[in-house]
Each structure stands twice: as structure tokens, then as C-alpha cells.
Image 1 (cartoon, rainbow, N blue to C red):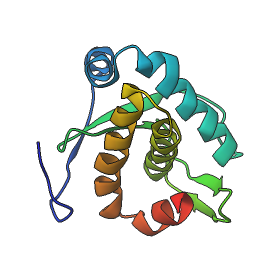
Image 2 (image 1 turned 90 degrees about the horizontal axis):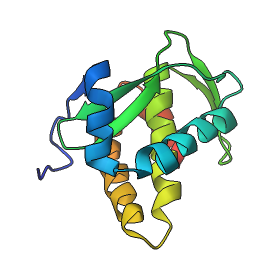
Image 3 (image 1 turned 135 degrees about the vertical axis):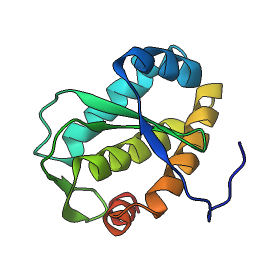
Image 4 (image 1 turned 90 degrees about the vertical axis):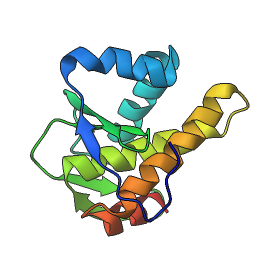
Amino acid sequence: MTTTSTSVIYCERLSDQLRVKHTADLFGIHFPMRLEPTIFGLAGQLSPDYDGGFWHFHALSNGGFYMAPARDTKFSVLSENGFDGSMSADAFGITVCLYAYSLLAFREDAFAEVCAEHFHLLRMLALNHIEATSILAAID
């Protein structure tokens, strides 16, 4: 589905029954083997508040995907670019997924192309997120 940067992107939280099929359709075996562990590792690096736990999965109307910790509390976020702030679990999940997609896009394989595409799809959502300023500052 082709969208423009001015299109409104909607997200839908995936049910437990759809999580495995949806991620397999988007990323294949790379989701459990590469993407998910990268996301969890980066979450620990970006926030001293992250200590594991269940994550919600979200499908985007533009074909994108992200996951976010299933918590109602804020996360302190410290990124290497100097960002030092606090964000909701949803914004933290978007931030971590953008980091992961970017990191995994700098390889020379087909999965890198998928990650690059998903970075841009998720960034479209991030641009209109209520915490866009913090998300963009953290990933810049």
C-alpha cells in the first residue's frame, strides 16, 4: 500500500492469536532470530527502567509494524546522541523499533531491505505521534 507523509497512519494492537502469523508474514524467521532480540537488547541499552516483560505488537495501516512494552509507566531514555528524557511505553517501543530497524538495515542482505522499509513505515507513524518530538530527538 502506498502512502504519503501526510497520510494518517492507524495502528491496531494484534491479538495474541495473530502475533506469530503477522510477524512471520512480515519478517519470516528473522523476527524471532534477529529482530526481536535486537529490540530487547536495545531497550535495555536505551532505558535503565527496562527490565523485560511482555510487549504488545502493533500492525500499521501502511503495512508497518512495531512493538511496545505492555506497561502504563514512563521510561527514562538516554540515547548516545545526548537525548535524555522520559516517554510512554508506546513512544519507547516506537523509538526502540526505529533504532532496531536502522541498525539492521545496514547489512547487505534482503532482510536489511525489509528493515529499511519498516523504518520508513514506522517513522510515518512517529511523525504524528503525540510524543513525536521526543521520539525524533531520541533517534536523531
